[in-house]
Every structure is written in structure tokens, then in C-alpha cells.
Amino acid sequence: MGGFSNVIMWEPGEKLEALEERVIKAQIAYCDGDKRGAAVMLGISYQTVLNKLEGYHQRDKDLNQRRKIQEQIMNDKCKVADGEMPERLGGLGSAKPSKGS
Image (cartoon, rainbow, N blue to C red; front, side, top):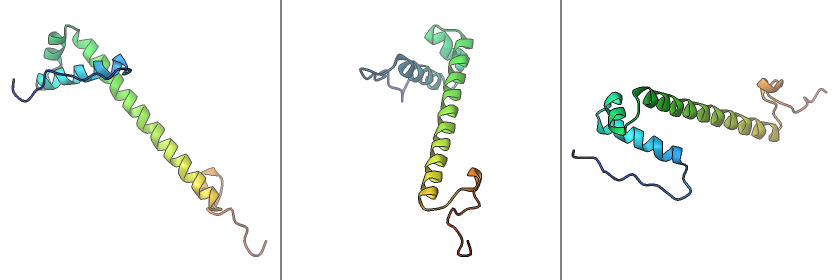
């Protein structure tokens, strides 16, 4: 059982879900990726392990999507502040009037 620590840190104020995620993932790693074996050792069903992992995956996917949207909004705000109107917001790249207008 070398290479594994039997200590999982918990910070006061940390949500139980975060601790649970670390425990499940650590047990799977300890079992060399065997989710069924990890479930048995944790005393939960294999389906529960799969459901938890899918939930973590979906949460991470949603967070990444939100980050991308926030970055795009910030980029658009910077462009507008510089006098440009992003094409996806209905502009042609510049909100500055041409000299002939």
C-alpha cells in the first residue's frame, strides 16, 4: 500500500461535497481505477460512485462553460470600451464613425 496517504485534509467551512469528492476519487486511485472495488471499500453502491463521478464531471463542465462566457463578455466589454463593436453583438468590428459620415 505504498505511495498513498491515509489522511485527507478537511478545512473548516469546507462543504461536505468537496470532501466526499476527494474521498471517492482517492479510493478509486487507491484501487487502481477500479470503481467497483472502490465502491465496496467505501460501503456504497457502484451506481452511486458512477452517479457521483458524473455529477462532478457535469459540474466541472458547467463551470468551464461559465468561465468561457465570462471571458467572452469581458473581451466584448474591452472592445466596446476601445470603440469597437464585436461582430457577434451586431457590429462590423468598429463603432467609430467613418470620416465620410
